[in-house]
Length: 152
Image (cartoon, rainbow, N blue to C red; front, side, top):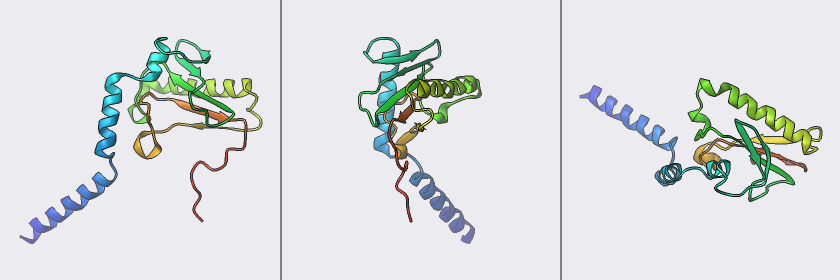
């Protein structure tokens, strides 16, 4: 009897922890719907939507986003549709490395390689990911400040 109570209590504790660390049902539904519709970035890659493209090769495309968050703001996107970093596999190793090399090249071309820039990827709900196609933000051209609120 005591063993059953401990087992049930352990299960409830683990369930509470796991559900508090998971995505909200609303976010899961929104994410599933967006994945089913297809990525806006895939539509840009396929030229179904317009974009100001600043770089493109067989694996990567980079373009100016609709909503700028800094004087220099580019999105660097693999043409392979990968939903999040959590969906990356070992076969993507070279592709991910290439994202960083393209970022380095673009930062130099944009004149921010020496003054400084930020590379950012948002993964899932707590980071505010809204497009489920892996992408890297290249941000610069001004002092960017802290990435998150600093606690004292």
